[in-house]
Length: 190
Ligand SMILES: [Zn+2]
Picture 1 (cartoon, rainbow, N blue to C red):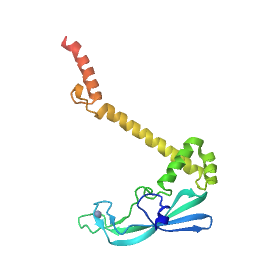
Picture 2 (cartoon, rainbow, N blue to C red):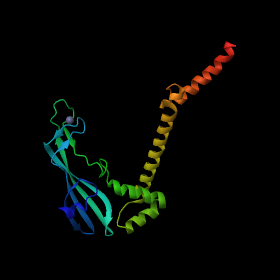
Picture 3 (cartoon, rainbow, N blue to C red):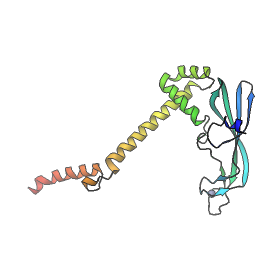
Picture 4 (cartoon, protein in one colour):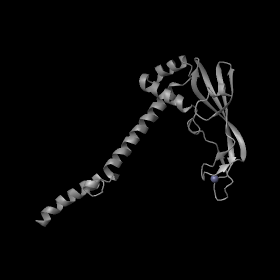
């Protein structure tokens, strides 16, 4: 079992089989014996069904690796919960409905930033990771947007929501507005 664990693309996953299938490695992972409802968080041991989720991963020995996860669908037994059936999630492996593991997605993004879509695609194929140039470009664009959004949110917090003690526990933008209001009031007071 320990030898199989080396193939695990993320911590705490249950690798049940690794085999060479044509020109790739196939790593089979099975879900856990219980899962927590995505809505209410109550644990369930009542499995409803399974489905198979296939993901690309980093290559091994220059050979592509495909991860095949047997994902359980579970019944929520909490009567007060609106969710009756929910799928198991695999944090650290990949987001729901992703087609690449998080660690491959990160490599794709780094290649894309460094070399651009098409050269990265060729390079990655040589390294045993089959990724199309459109996927690489999409990943780079998605990351750039996420960084832009995070920066915008931080600036918004810094100016509009951060409470500053020296100015009376109000955000800087409010202090500035008050200052200009005050300036406008001065001539009328005079
Ligand atoms: Zn529930």
